[in-house]
Length: 152
Length: 156
Image 1 (cartoon, rainbow over the protein chains, first blue to last red):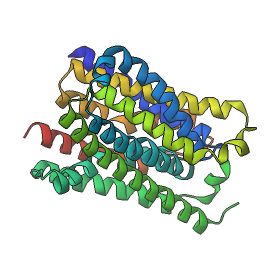
Image 2 (spheres, chains in turn purple, brown):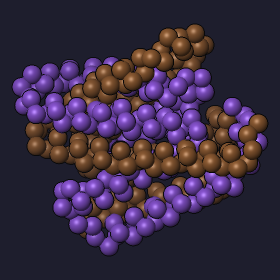
Image 3 (spheres, rainbow over the protein chains, first blue to last red):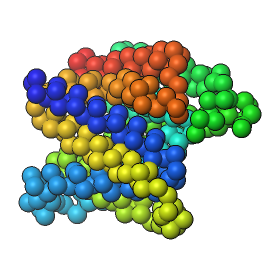
Image 4 (cartoon, chains in turn green, orange):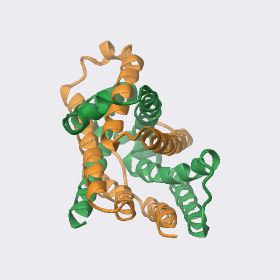
């Protein structure tokens, strides 16, 4: 279990570093090109492990699994990442990252709609808290001095 | 230099895009859950397949801008490669973490990502952006809410 927690913490470092590197790269590259480069290199890293461990599973997969993976890829690694990079290049990593982190809230809401799941009181309170936090971050944007933008 | 109103509009637009992206990530979790469960696909394999299709789509979308930006300094391409390597490595580590510890333990840890990002932004992006008290407070509230949702869905 301790190893699992350590790996989870290391993954946090990876996700955060990724946002910081993307913010730096997007100073000169457009979000679409940046997203293509990062998704392609991300594929190279994960496919090495996936093919090593699960090559037999890949060849035996139901064709419909590929269709779901296609939808997943388009929504997550094309659409969401492209929009994320557009947001990163406009609002910065410090504002974008906390807003992106509330995606489990949207997942919960969509699971209620499409998978017929029902939230309990703690989840309801969590949704309210997250939305309030997001509102606070967005309201900060309105008070931000304009001269900070000139740094880019 | 932009006017204050112009920069506010721009930052609000950026925040709106971040919300839209979070919605897409939320939808993707539902798609992944259904795809992996219904067809018994290992998470790292499903993620890798998704990255493959995502890269194909992004190649089509970005093809036009490639020649125009081919002359940009190489370090900016290097930053994007590092962004891909670190996020790909992070996904691999997260999946490995899930195989070594319960979801109820790993998911709350994984949701702490913005704390690391804010710290790194404060340390390495001082020239580009500023981490304010309001952003830190908003992040703390948003994270508390996410932790409540995760705990509510796994423990209650």
